[in-house]
Image (tube, rainbow, N blue to C red; front, side):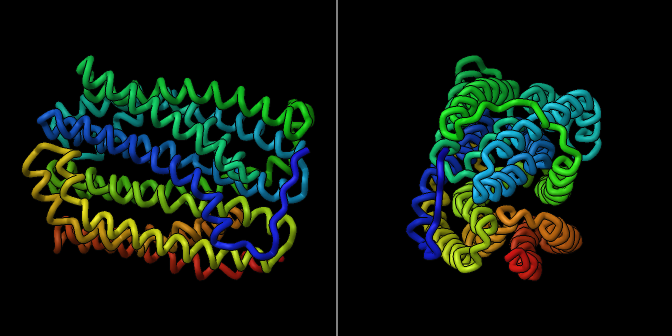
Length: 441
């Protein structure tokens, strides 16, 4: 069986080394979004970019709402790994697979409802609505593969094999980019093309990922995953409460990003399109900084499994510092290259002009948001999901109220100011609950 141990002195270097593979995989994820945005932004008509913005926001809200399949897996697997309970780790994966399949079937069946709600929620032209319907109709079929990939990524993060999860995410994103580019540039399939590219890439990688993981468990854990004793009421109940808290927390968080798209659509399709472009910068920074959070999740769970408070406090301090200083570097790069990147993403002059006027928000948000990103990782590793849920409820409720006021009186700049305040609120509310984790030691 594999074993893993950490000294009490968990340094920034150790966290950085664990995070490097995650950097590349996390970079690949928003890169896919940037490529899709660029493909739509250079078709000469705003409707393609607006439709992709709304449709991807809706699908992201739905799929990310079940990100508990990754987050819950990380915390439980990491703590079981600290106890060397490898057989229970494999059963945790199988239980989550069953949950993912049930969820996927439900989502696919309610596709017509999703499309109707989206049409009624967003104020767009008839042409844009048809493009939204096209994207959702295709993308919804990729949900089973995407949720299974969530679980497998959580498994490898939990056992600190970040290089494996990162490699698969990079390959997934590369396939997505290749397929989408081919369908849009060669076959002129526009919105349908980017959705189809995502669908094919996810199923191909899900199949490869499952086969690889089965062989990994057999060879490294020296056990064969089985369905025997899979249905344990107490363990399923524990899994349910952990997953339900993260589900509520995540659906509220993803709604906040859908809310940004909604307020942007009320300001006009140009602002909706611009905010889509600007959000790519925020997502890029978030996924990059989340590398520290992802690698920390496994260590935090392991230290709790070993009841090593000194290691926990040290990894908390070092990871937060690393995240903040990396965010500063990202902001400097944005300051230097913002206009050049905007010009690549879109060739529409009005969208470029409006984007230039909002550069300040893209520059100052990453350092402010770095704290909440890292605290998320710490709370996930500790399986302190109830507190994550409560913190997010307070933050999002405050954000919605603030954003309505600021967008009304200060337009799109007011909307982006509310996004900045939202990130700060997330940090403050999580910090309030931090002592709950210390009680585990």
